[in-house]
Image (cartoon, rainbow, N blue to C red):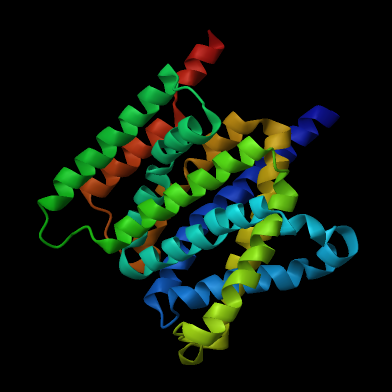
Length: 296
């Protein structure tokens, strides 16, 4: 097989793996939220496990002094603790489908806003069209869901929107400060652990003693290794082989996949309102009209 074609197929394999992890993040985090684990337990398992796994690489290969830069602290607060804690609180209060929509659906809005405020990026026609599709989907979802007495919006959805804003600010600052992705990923994990774990151990409630070791192992392995380390590396490698637009198009399907799987896995309903919200969000994120424009 030609080397270029081989690299392309490797890229598709990497992006499918990353998509699976991103979709599973919504389901696994909701499982943690429905268990006796507190959001603080899940946050501690995420960054504590990641730091333990990364420690040999940090000691042997990296200059740890770079993490004393105040910029690493800022991105750790936004892309690490801020995103994780808000998202996990949201998953303890709201269904997985709400997380799929409000965590990922609001991201293009926050990304556009943070890009304008922090990086001075201008809005293009494609972005306006994409945001219009997302706004229509979320608006239709809100209208239909409010007619259903068994469905409601609450603080969990607010937490998801806040987590989405925190992640958008993090990515905008990475771009403005030109921070390389691998050191930034490692710095976020390590600094988050150093800042959070002492506070968690001394002051925050824990439900670790109320769950089995299998539950703890699942959350530690998935959140701390798969999400923080492996999925980030496969994402970077996929972008290098396929380009940001192709990878982004694939990963925009993660919320739809997660919300669909939540029906059999978590026994959560997929209502008409949620389906409209997901459809609008995926259409706005994928921007299918760009494919035809590129072909022309």
